[in-house]
Length: 595
Image 1 (cartoon, one colour):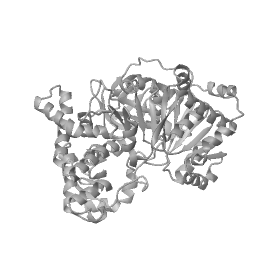
Image 2 (image 1 turned 60 degrees about the vertical axis):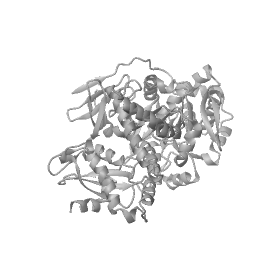
Image 3 (image 1 turned 90 degrees about the vertical axis):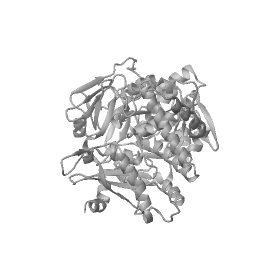
Image 4 (image 1 turned 180 degrees about the vertical axis):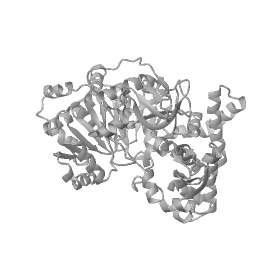
């Protein structure tokens, strides 16, 4: 059994809670800017002292409304400043936050309310409130619901006016690292979501290590980031807490349709995103260049960026390549960096594999994407590539104080202070995930090289076994195909079948540009069998097949007339495929491939 452990060199607090970061900031730098809030067409700064005062007022309102230490408070909202404000207020009151994706259905919200035993809830909109009311009969413990768009913050502030500072501080000071900070329900690609118990200590360990190791991001002069991922996901949440801890200026936006405008105005020094965001940035730039007749220049620039990044790993950059790179930096790369705000040197990618091609492309244009790996159960990152220790194609080495093992069947096991303690009210699932020695069974297959860098090779439950007995990991093939500008989603199939095949969906935005450029008319549903479109996808399939053996290669594919979306129920809020749902809904298309 192969194993690697990174030694712990930083001191992790053994007392206190996450609210101590706010208290320390006010004591040491009360006028330090912790946040910038969107106010119409501008950003307004919020100092540490202002944030602390707002948090205290809202926390008093929660206490006055009957929230007790250890209570669960459900929060249903898009990513916005008030999300973070409420998160810290809930902790200040000694309670635990239960985040819910704002896109969740009434049924999903009902399950979380019922299972968590939440006593109060804060929702963003009237639509969210209606979903809660629809399932109110299932939430026997739920006493109050506030709506952000209907004055929730003001109402809580007014309600808490009579609560004394001393009473609130007694409540805050009683919280320890062992207390529950949040109950995060997994996205649920299969079955009902399970509640992951994450303590203040889990977050304190994770951030104590991550902020230290990612000092280039968190300690840089004028460090700032703009959060646009859902704060209901642990990936965005850990960055929120890390920014407060390190006093990095943090902004929020949920309007991804105006993301480039927000990035240009905010000018973050680093960003975080899931791989699909990086794919969209690349694909949009490629489509725009081709539609403007500059496709050959962009393609050459992309090829040069990838080659330049690979040469950096080899330590040999040829003079001609250096000249070409400098030329394309003026023509192309500068514009791409400007689109991300102009000051962004680093990006953090997680949630799914990024793929070597995209990682090399972005590093080649001057934006280093640091890919990491973690799960909800591990308070986000277990491993990460670092600015001075990066190996593209890997998810980095374990963070300090974290151990990794490869089990005999190839499954990755991890142990460390960021690993959750149990699933809420679900001991059988806990016993399946955590063994007697504290090793967490991730369900992911992987490898560890001699230097400790970890590579993810697939999901244990997603390995396909063809009729010929060949084991096939779908993820690498799917990632390669999704790199094509026209592709939105891809799912590889072939369990107990004579060969491997794929279902492919088309990106609507990229399709519109491609259709106009090729002088065609109609929607994807009209052209999903168009020879030119199929030729484009075949090129992507050929590229994917180049990285695997013949037995693992995709022999056939079908382009579907519709895309898979979160609203349609085929992908999770973090854009992970719900394979069981796709197989159920498109079983006829799969069978048609083989008949």
